[in-house]
Length: 280
Image 1 (cartoon, rainbow, N blue to C red):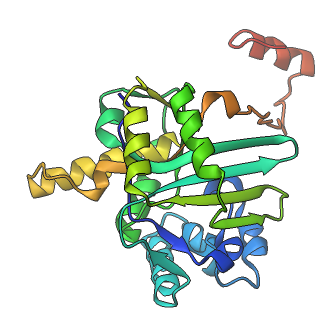
Image 2: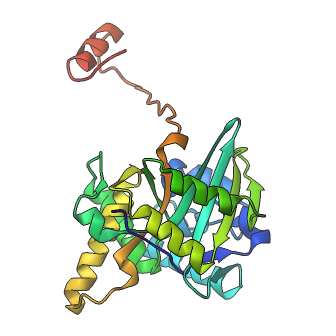
């Protein structure tokens, strides 16, 4: 059974969504982040990559970086650029580039299900990156980077998505990288309950991307429960996720470049790689 929960989203004004939207923190270099945020005071990179506004010599994992990002987040809230929903809701989020499109559910996934192994992992995590995400959640008092999950498509879920996306979206824009982003809000109680029930028939969710973010959410929940000695349901019982059906996902190449062969020939390098991996 996959447990999903609606939540009170903090979201940009529709007319400012294109300016707020930014790529994930870990897919752009510091210089790229600065270039993308240049001239745009609303860019979320000023929150997720707050070091772009600070001294180059500052450690990106310094408390000052997280605190600066938290300050920028609060400024966007105070200016009304970001506002919080009055009551819990779901979102439906579509990405479209070229001929491909994928539509997912924006929801809170269950940390307890993650801890119990019902949300499946396929990667190990690095402590330094886990610690980074823990510090960000704790200092910002928010989860801003969704975990990318997927599930085996079910007809009932597909039908629900069709119903939501048949109406006018709340937000729609094309980003500089030509990806079209479209968002629908789901506030109707009947629709909320319908998708919660539909996901109860799904035995497991799978992490496609976001192992460090989900691990960090688990650690934050465990620490807060231990300090408060309470099992009362709290916001940190869930982690922000976008959940896509498996039949819409597209796997793209993620290429690496070897700059130095350390005295080996290309043939020797291929031989060493083939000893540990499947080489094609």
